[in-house]
Amino acid sequence: MLTVKDVDKAFGGLQALRGVSTEVEEGTITGLIGPNGSGKTTLFNVITGLYDKDGGNISFRGQAIDGFPPHRIAQLGITRTFQIPQVPKRMTVLENMLIAGHGQIGENPLKVFLRWSAQRRQDRELVERAEELLAMVDLAHLRDEFTGSLAGGQIKLLSLAQALMTDGDMLLLDEPTAGVDLALTDRMMELVAGVHSQGKTLLIVEHKMQVISKVCEYVYVLDAGQVIASGEPAAVQNDPRVIEAYLGEEDTAGRERM
Amino acid sequence: MVAFLVHLAIMTGIFAIVTLSLNFQVGITGLSNFGQAAFFAIGAYTSALMYMAGIPFVFGVLAGMVIAALFALIIALPSSELRADYWAIVSIAAAESLRLFINNEKWLAEGPFGLRGIPRPLSSLFGDNYNLFYLVFVLLCLVVTYFLLERLTASPFGRVLRGIREAEVLMSALGKHVFHFKAIAMIIGGVIAAVAGSLYAHYITFISPEHFAPAVTFLIWTMLIVGGQGNALGVVVGALVITLLNTSTRFVKDLLFLPTDLVAALRTLSIGALTIFFVVVRPQGLFPERRRIIPQSSKEGANSC
Image 1 (cartoon, each protein chain N blue to C red):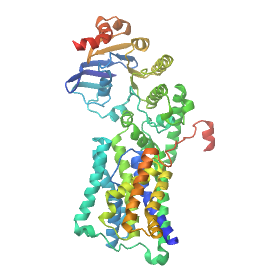
Image 2: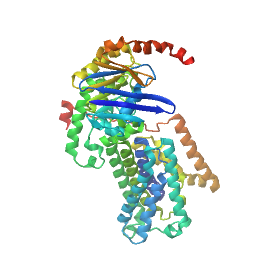
Image 3: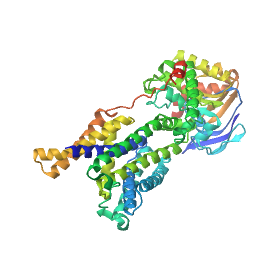
Image 4: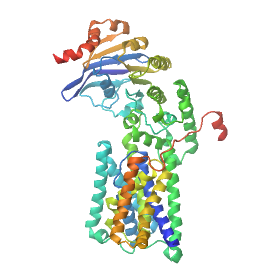
């Protein structure tokens, strides 16, 4: 469904991605793991058009999306979340959900004053769907609060629900459990599994191996901008290179000094 | 006294319209536009020049709106390339370029001498009661502007603008063409400011480049900051407070027998102090932005329809 082929990306002298190739099959949950600074978020930014890549190709459902601006990629059905959620704080939780709806008639300022009934119908459908999703992520009671008054974990949940509002077929989740307590981590993974069972294809960035091995069918391991291993979680976990990359994380400081 | 109150109300009305337009760009969309005086000038000059050339008032106003829209589009162009603060510099530079152009091109509108004796539309009809008529007209324009912008702000379009204000990257990741929305917000704000400019020119009957100096933009910003960014009602109150301060200092002069320059300086000083006070102590303004509650979709919602 999403094919990344030989993608390179450098920031000045730092080679953030080096010939990265990944394939996400339709209907699967694929994990992307690796230590801090290994290029996971960079890869997300390249896929979603936020960064221009230096080389390689990316295609979605067989269509090349190289050079597409972020909003076009999103409109094709790839929705991403951010490691640090960027929700507008001076909008209510419900409004945060509604902004994610694609193809709203009332986004055209002229049509705001025409086509009343079609708009009202569409808005009602959107509100209904938003309320369902908010109930799903246990935020229904905060519907009309400013998002700025939410706690960190609640904002993570809102981000996930917001991404689902887009109706995109593919979700890229950037560390949905980062900075989240244990109970909420379990809940988040439960939600992710639920989303998957509804037919969405997911690519998830994580660096907690346990979390990934619970939900993912296939895993890519990035280290220093390169894919060092891929396969089923159990197999990858025992791969010596992966163990080194992960155990090495504690030694990294020492290695860098050398 | 009544004459003064009518004057105060007309000026408040005109400035409330400009401040509402600025609020749409700054308070709703997050575009730090420091060139609003230029749109005010475009409206004022275009409709004054066209009316003086014998073209009906309405067409002059419309022409001003069209030119303002084009100017807004030009200013909006670099908004996707530049960070917000750098773009603010672009907006003030563009406005100053336009003002200096008017100042230096004598053939166009008498350069620094400005346009004098701008005729007032329908003046023969109302005679001595003209200002009263004009007040009603200005307030009508204000009410229309208010509800137009409020409707837009609450609409899906306005939601996207408010999303862009705080989370531009998120909005593009959600499939919104951010530049497209920013440009439209600039155009809507610019066009409305131009209408206010037309109202101003035909009321004051004398305009010169001086009337559209950056200080005017800052005055409008003060109204916005004091009133409350993102709150349309607050913005109107802000316009009232600052206009009151700006026009009533003449009474202080008469009451306390102070020299004119001192009063002018005190006026600027008091407005500056007020701005600083609000920025530091109450940045959300007199009336902070309020939550927009959307009715439930369930049965209760259906019944209320």
